[in-house]
Amino acid sequence: MKGIIGAIVGDIIGSSYEFDRPKESKIPYDFDIITKNMRPTDDSVCTLAIADWLIHTDRTKDELIDKLHYWCNKYNYGFAGMFRKWVETKSREPYNSFGNGSAMRISPIGFYANSLEEALKLAKISAEVTHNHPEGIKGAQAVVAITYIMRNASVNDNVNTALEEVKKFVKEHYSYKVEYTEEEWNEHSAKYSFNETCQGSVPEAIYCALSSNSYEQAIRKAVSLGGDADTQAAIAGGIISAYHPVPLSIIAKCLELLPDDLREIINTFNRTLKHD
Image 1 (tube, one colour):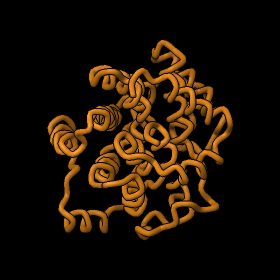
Image 2 (cartoon, helix red, strand yellow):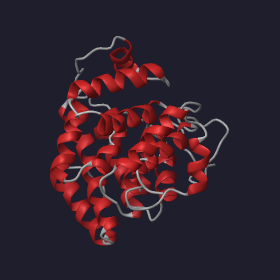
Image 3 (tube, one colour):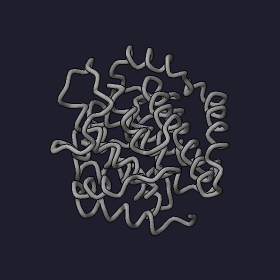
Image 4 (cartoon, helix red, strand yellow):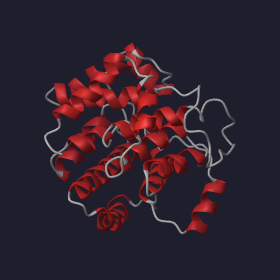
């Protein structure tokens, strides 16, 4: 299965490896995908709030704020810092964040949009309700652009060609480094530490997706990097699920952990899409 389930599953798998370890520690590449400690986090709730906004509203900024307030207050899965305050006080003003929260919730737009222009416009709206710093908007738009382009490439059966084009696109438009030799990546990942900013985590998550030949490989790269595991796996998983399927056995285990109303958003979103 492809689609927004990729970000949800990535979040749930990554949740086992972020909260119960020192931030400086590394995670072996062959970590257990399914664990008794895994759970949906704020990444899943915010992603599904975006999906709900896309299919059930006119997609205005005020309607998105309402959706985020509703779902995040209903399922408070450990929101941090300024976003927690924004949710709990039901603020309607952004707080100039450049955290990776703008990028981790964005994948539904890449699957919903009918043009790259629409995808980028919706991504900007989505980011700006909270993460209105230029880096916050940039991170969201980069992830959406890649997801949209690779989704179309999968439909048109030209994934390999599109992968090379999208790497060039990201470098030219967003100045993100998303290409490494194996030696360069090993050196980079060995030095990498926990980072919740867009500029310090989104390029790495993009690399994990674009350099992988399967969904599971992308998730293993993202989590074993040892950073913001659930978010980087959600971002990488959301991208690669545009052109590689998420294993059904893993989906089944993760869906068991979602409340019924959140699972229904996934089902409704998939039924509503106007394209293949």
